[in-house]
Each structure stands twice: as C-alpha cells, then as structure tokens.
Length: 320
Image (tube, rainbow, N blue to C red; front, side, top):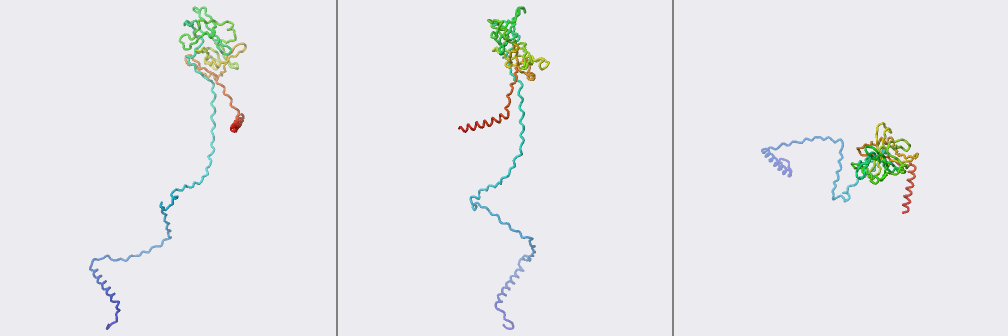
C-alpha cells in the first residue's frame, strides 16, 4: 500500500467483529435500560480457630443386609451382685402359756334333777304320805336308803322311816310330788341301817388334809334315781356372807375314818370363790376341781428320746 505500512490480513476480521459489537451497543442505548452491573465486594473470611472434625456417618441398618442372627436382641450381661445378708432379726419370745383352769363346771337343767330335801313323797294313787328328809349312802358313794318323815294326823304320830332306795321312783319335772313310793314298799331292817353308812344331809365335807369345805344341805336326783350333785353351804369358809354352791356328785370321795364315813372333795378357797352361787330359780352349775396337768418331760429325757427315734427310723429304712 502506498503512503503507509502494511496491515496484516488477519486483523480485518477482528475489526469487523468490533464493528458489529459497536453497532449492537448503539442499539442497546436506545432500547430498554438494563440494570447496572455492580461489582461484588469480596469480604475477607476469618480463618476458624480450629478445624472441626466431621462425624462419621451412622451406618443405616437394613433388614436385607443383616444376617438372621442379628435380628435377635442380645441378652444383657448382668454381673452378679454381692448380696449382703439381712441383719439378724430377734425372735420374739413366745407368749406365756395360759394358766390352767381352776374349776370345771357342768350345767344341770332344773327339769333334769330335783332336790331331795323336803320333797313330797306320794303313793302311786297320788296321795302324799310324807316328805323326804335324808339320804343314806355307803362307802362307794352309792345311795342305799331314803329317810321319809311319814305324816300322822294333824302332826300327831309323825315318824321317820328308812325305805330302800329301790322303792322310789323320781320325776324331776313333775309339778306335784316328785318322788313316788311303791305301794308294796316296806321299811329297811334296823340291822341293815346300822351298817357303816352316811346320812348325807348336814354332813361336813372336808379336804384331804382335814380342812372343812362346807356342809351338805341338799342332794339333786335325776329321773334315773342317780345323785347328780350336792348343795354345799360354804358360809364362813371363805367369807362371812351366806353362800351355797353345787358340787358334782362324782367329785365326792367317801373314806372311812374312826369307823365313820366322811365325804371328801378337794376344793380350795380360790376354787370355791370361782364357783357361781347356787340359786333355786336358775340352772344348776355344778363344780368339780380342774384336773392337774401332767408335768412336762425333762429336757434331758426329750433329748435322749430324739436319737432313739432317729435310730429306730434308720433301722426301719434298712429293713425295707
């Protein structure tokens, strides 16, 4: 080219491209305004004081990937723990045994027994011939005779006659005369009445040591002609008041002393005080002394009996 330097041929396309961009920029100036481009400001970041270690990801359990044994929960291992023995507990002392009873009481209904003294005695036809005033017993305590006060006319000619016990029939529940005398009954022979026997009414009852317990004031007879109890006047024995009690006939014993028959009963003052009083309008509570309990075996005897029992048991097993 004349008058200048040669331009390289490769610059022509570049200039053409710049020309196109310039034309497009002019069109943009006259078109809609776009938002201005703002350069971003870079803020400095302070370095962390210490790097934080990333936690390992937790494994995800899947039923398909786990074996069959992994499904069963493992039993926790429990270490044995030393158990301290409980402190010894003091064994309470056993309660003291109940004191033995002082007396034994038996209830006798009024319809089951009737008093002997002053009971009317009648013939089988119902005619009253007298009143019973005493009972005669032998050394075994068996009743033998009844003493009857046969009435005369207007009290004149009254006499006491002994009749055998078998000549009477007793009806405790009868509203009339409770004692009936057989029509064919005859008085007892005088020789037989003189034998060693005991008129019971007003007889003194003693203890085995000779101390007086009381005085018999009546006898209670049942429908089988058997004595059931005696009524004792214990006035002055344990107190100054007049007091009567009923004692079981079976509690009496009869002993011969100085050719005379004496009734005995072992009732102490405490037992007499524990006995309910006798009353004609109340059920009869007949007393007997309480049986004496058997003594307990000695400890040495009980200990020696235990090995003997064990040896007997072993011999029995060996024999089998």
